[in-house]
Each structure stands twice: as C-alpha cells, then as structure tokens.
Length: 246
Image 1 (cartoon, one colour):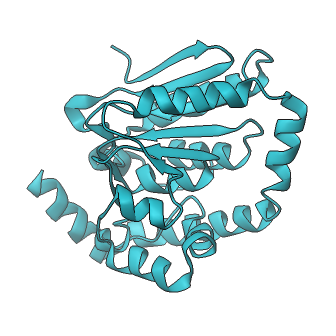
Image 2 (cartoon, helix red, strand yellow; image 1 turned 180 degrees about the vertical axis):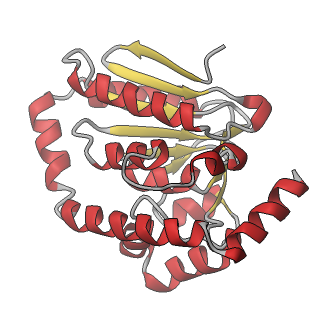
C-alpha cells in the first residue's frame, strides 16, 4: 500500500497521507512523492485544485525523525525542503482537511494552503524549538503575519499544542467541521474552486500572495539555520531522547 495516495476527482487532485502505523510520519520518500504529485498536477490542465488530507485519526505527526536524520545534509534539494519550496511555487489552489495530530510540518504546511478545514479532533503543534531546531516553511514570517508577533512567539517558542477551536480563532483554519464530515466538506470546497474560471482563479491567488519573494528569502534563511541547529549538540541530545522515548 502506497504511503502517499493520489486520486483525481472533478478537477481536484486528492493527495492522501497514508502511513497510519507511523502516525503518518513523513519519510524522505514520502516527501519526494508529495512533490512529484504536486508538480504533475500543476502541469495537468485537467487539474484545477489540490486537496491534501491524512487519516481520520491523524493528519501527520511530522517528520519521521530516524529517516530524516539519514540525510542531514540540508539544502534546497533535500526532499523535505524541496517539498516546502514546491508549496511556495504552486499556482493552483491548495485545500487541507485536518484530523488528529498536525505536528511540525503538519501545521506549517497549512500556512501555504488557501482553505483549511479541521474537525474537533485536530491538534496542532510547532515543536521546533522543543527539538532544538528552528521553524521551516516560512513559518517565522507567515505566522506572525497571520496571528500577530506575540501569539506567533508563544506558538513557536513554547511549542505547546493547541486545539481546532484555537486554530480557528487564530485564522489558521477557516472552519471547524463536525467529526466525520471534514473530508467531504473540504472536497466540496475544492471542487467548487476547481469549477471557477482557472486563469482568474490563479491570478487572484497570486495577487493574494504579494510577498512571495520575501517568503522565499525567509525560507532560505530558515534552511540555513535549520542545517546548523540540526548538527548541534543540543539537537542531537533532543533527538536521541525523542528516539529513545519512541
């Protein structure tokens, strides 16, 4: 069974993270698949929108730490960061349906989505500092713009989890949908997007993102710091403790 599944329906490319035995932790191969499915969908004129989702009890618990550490030489070609930069370069809209854990990249990916829907089980967390790392995906720029600098500092520096209603109040998600309905609800919104005039849709999406170059530069800065932090003694100690706990 593929850990990243793809299905095209009514102009929407549905990408499903499917690794329930590992709480949908993302391996390097999974990042590569995610990137390729996005790139393919961008070039397919029959696809007008994307929907990303996980399993009913988990969106993603973040990186597969052991696998991530196998390739700790970080640059823009690293599978995880290549995926993040592909999100930045998307022209077609991206919708997310979030259930259960949305940890690390499970939350930062949402900052690149156009519409985000969650059910009451969703739990968000940005535990980068907890692991002696720094944020990625431009979160250090996008999150303060979205929620304000003080709240962004709370979320990033303390790394505490927060629930779906809090995420909704912070505008990280558009709406909290009743349990069991979020996948269908998000798909209906994605199909509605796919039925909009595609050129106008993409042009409007681009206009809504006037600071793309600044986000790219911030992502590059984050990548530089992430690479340094990953090799630090404090990160090695945190990861060792994390893996022993697992």
